[in-house]
Amino acid sequence: MEKIEISHKTIIFTVFFLIFLWFLYQIREIILIVFISFIAMTALNPVINKLEKIKIPRSLAILIVYLLLFGILAGLVALIIPILVSQTASLLGVMSNLIERLNFAGFQLNIQDYSEQLARVPGNLFKIIASTFSNLLKFFTFMVITFYLLIERVKMKEYLHVLFRQDGEQQAEDMLNKLETKIGSWIRGQAILMIIVGVLSYLGLLLLDIDFALPLAVIAGFLEIVPNLGPTLAMVPAAIVGLSMSPVMGLTVVVLYFLIQQLENNFIVPKVMEKSIGINPLISLLVLITGLKIGGPLGMFLAIPVFLTLQVLIKEFYKMRTAPKKKTPEDL
Image 1 (cartoon, one colour):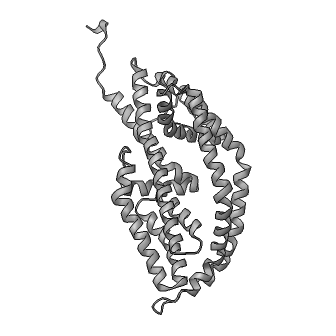
Image 2: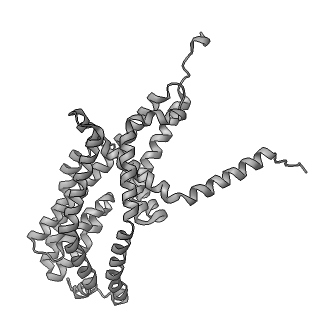
């Protein structure tokens, strides 16, 4: 029988590698916050650069953008969130009754088995809200890290120089630019799409005088992140509410969502995403499902940025590996 010998170096390397993995696991929350901050930096840096071009100092430009974001956030909290929470709780509380009341073309649904679970959802909603406020420290940590990443963005190529060869700074700058193009453009475009679809859905439901217009519109905007399937899923609760009023109203709601989807696919998406490098819808869907399975809702939100980051890194390091080595004067 052939002997398998393990050297001391292999044992030491394995032990240190396991210790390193254990260390990464212990600081996983910090790594997550830093990665989210990096994503935010890729989305905000082009805006900061534009402000710098009009002679605004970089630190002041970041503060201006932060103030605008906080102003928008404060406006949402003051004007929309209380109504949204109230209407969402009411919608979830009566959803089982709405479905039980449906009687369209002689077809009636009965979800008595699920009524207890639906009744508990409003309570869980308030737990989620309470948990959100308890994580304010993490939010401010994220904002501070993002601020410093934006400040240091111009020097970041120097920090990444060690990952590349002699002309490392230029390669690092190229990689960062590609990350900003892919991740930043996708995030900005996706955020704009979610807002546009949410607003259009809200205005349409409001014109039709549909109950719970705000939470239904928020669902439509939120599910915009899921390609192709999202708009159909968002239509289901709205159609249920419409059908509970009358079959004609239910059909009208379906038509409304269909028109919004056609408008989005043919006009809004091409315009908003023209600078963004698209992802195949099937791959995007699989990535989102994987992210949801691994990390829940947060994992789903981070799935595409993680995928794009890995895509850029793998391509850049492969290009670096396969690129012909530049001749030095000693080689000539």
